[in-house]
Length: 473
Image 1 (tube, helix red, strand yellow):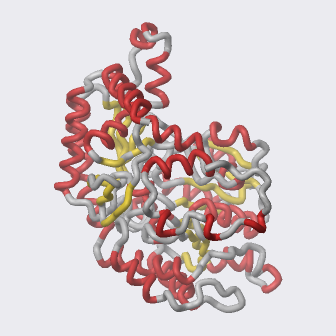
Image 2 (cartoon, helix red, strand yellow):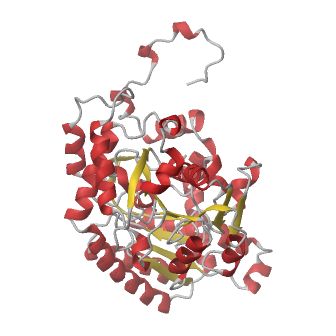
Image 3 (cartoon, one colour):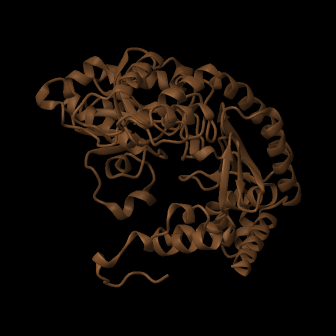
């Protein structure tokens, strides 16, 4: 199909569209072609190189099926957005229950979102009470940053190196990887990075008493599943309180049971001033995000009628998304998903630790609950010299994707590398995952590491996959 070249828009009819019934019946080649022509061509090409552009047509729980009928274990979990699994029947039933209600009606007070906000106040720690409901994690971060500035009267924002808070302009300004920031400069001014897990640099900045908020993740996800040292979060809380800086904790990926507690900050007994949520809040079906803060902070920023509309969202708090979120919270508590994540996460980490002892390709295994990362060793200096630096570059940027490719294409297990550290693959399955399913993944990794004992062997296997994908296409 050719790209349009100035045809009369009035002559375009719905009959020329790909109708929904035909859309769901597209084959893999047609899907890839439409992505390359009308969406992100570079991403489509990149996924195709490692045969990651498979067409998945069905999903249930921890499993997905491709167009050829093959079944896969989803150990990526949409980067933490599938704590309740794919297509949980209770969430689908919740959507069916509200299907006749108005979904968007701004000239009113939303019925379902009011209940969601109350439920969030009940489950979040401390005196967090007032929520702003939106559609995504980046939106939640944007709103939290604006709230902090409005409530504090200060402008400066502090964030951590290696962090990831989103790719909209404000969220990107507090995301700690230059690769994503560089081409969009200048970003929001007044943002300063400090090392994650280190307190001296943070204290030095906070002492100036110019900072509206310090934003951090209780576990850095895209940074490579980085857990801060013991006592770090508690001391951060003390320092922020001492110097009048609001503490924003980004629980977008770590929250709602992922780390073995309902919220990761609860491992350290820390209550933030503002908490950001998203991903699994929508039950893996609807886009939903939120930030929640105290009554006092909210009133300072938006407490009067003339300030009530300073920050709004057209789709935020819509009926369908709110219904899905209510159902998701109920599932997480009724099925004790945080408790399950703690138990099976420890089982997974123990199994990975045994693999690390056997295979030098594994540099580190770390995680909390079912938020787990496997980091790979860099090639030695000799290997790098022999390959004129190619080994180092491959290891730095691609080894994680090569292992993920082996898991996907040979073992039918879906994983991916972390954005800020591509040398780490993440394991974030739905929280209902069983030990038997974890054993399947551990055995697959054992097979990969036993077969590819060195970096070059893994790289050769990845290269073969790339060549085969080109031949097929």
